[in-house]
Amino acid sequence: MLGLTIAYVHEGSIAAELVLETGDMVTSVNGQPLRDLIDFTFACAEDRLSLTVIKKDNVQLECVVEKDLHDDLGISFSQATADGIRRCHNKCCFCFVDQMPKGLRPSLYVKDDDWRLSVLQGNFVTLTNLEPEDIKRLTTEHLSPLYISVHTINGELRKQMMGNPRAAAIREQLTTLAKAGLELHCQIVVCPNFNDGVELKQTVAELAQLYPAVASVAAVPVGLTKFRDHLTPLIPFN
Image 1 (cartoon, helix red, strand yellow):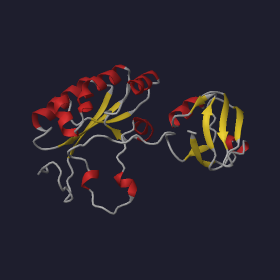
Image 2 (spheres, rainbow, N blue to C red):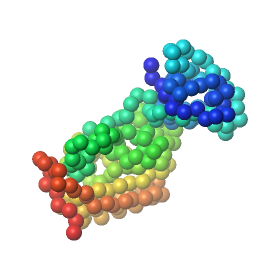
Image 3 (cartoon, helix red, strand yellow):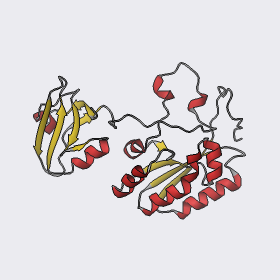
Image 4 (cartoon, rainbow, N blue to C red):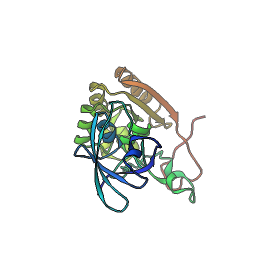
């Protein structure tokens, strides 16, 4: 059963009046299954809600709520998505996770690439795992801001640097999202002799043409560590 697990119920809130507790799972609102926190936020904009809740003892409840439009239910969830985090399938030549030492906390090795976390938390994503239904949801629900790791607007070069054929579609993806009126913040990890110089100028110039949809562009120098065994040879900026 997919849903969002309650991490905390705020004292005196609507959720507290419903006797919802930490560990309970909200699986749907108004009959619509919850895919993520975005779905929950949209649903809670209504003044009448029907929540399907699975209690910690696996008993299912239907909770009906009547509230003012802007009233908050007073629930914090333990996760932002009901189906886990979409992972990165790229093999970027500059990936910082690949050049970290062993033995650090496990969360530092998680390569997330989930556009929902970009909208909700400001995580940077590459868009290489977007499916047509994701594009449709982003544009029809007008979900933004999105924080996008562009690196280069040159599709062939981006495919080479990111080790993923799907990376080549970046120009078309950005154009589609911009035409839909989404707010985009772009990042370029600049690697000497790859996407600097003329390539960097071209990338910035094309991103500027998408203003005001592209609201910002950050160019950051590649970070390198001594743990780059068997990785693409890169040099730092001086």
